[in-house]
Length: 78
Image (cartoon, rainbow, N blue to C red; front, side):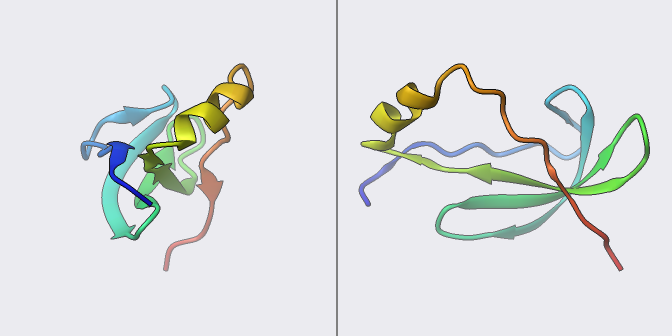
């Protein structure tokens, strides 16, 4: 795969996309990280997934530029 060009790490307590509070890390894998979060307007629990950008991926992401980012995945936590 090569080396990671961008590997986002979210700070606990920070806001993601202006609407989601980052609460805790849940896991990490080859492609990115997953955090437990909360939608501020509703209090609903969400999973916030970040992806690593690898060298060579930049050209593919340029083709998608202009599309809106996905919302965090809504999920239940026990």
